[in-house]
Image (cartoon, rainbow, N blue to C red; front, top):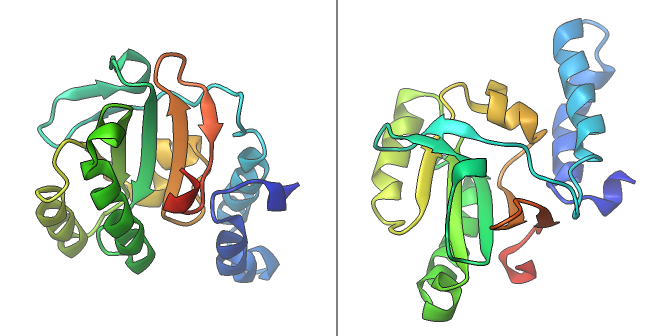
Length: 178
């Protein structure tokens, strides 16, 4: 079943296997990893996405369920400005979003999991290039509520939503799947 779900699960599982197989690994850490692995199976097309309540980059309140748009889709992008795979994804998504027909149909909500001062500085620099996107940063990174609610194991992760209903439409692994 996990192979049918996106979220870069195989990469995440390989990265986490040492913790899952290590008897000395803290029980709470292993339990959280297992909770996220099981939870991934519940985030499937046709289900309502978990709400996201955070502050945007201008420190204004943001709520996914209260996010109003005339566009048809919302793309949630979990990423880090300090991640090579994320840079590749953003590098492909940015020119795609510049196309008028895409901008008319899609809003992008980019949720940064950057935590350290160098990561935050890289994020602050990068978002200046990503105009038109809604930028959020989870200060606790992968340990944040939003990362837990979306069962994030590795990044980047994309979740395509119906903008009106906030129903999950797809969990693309690559930009080409949008």
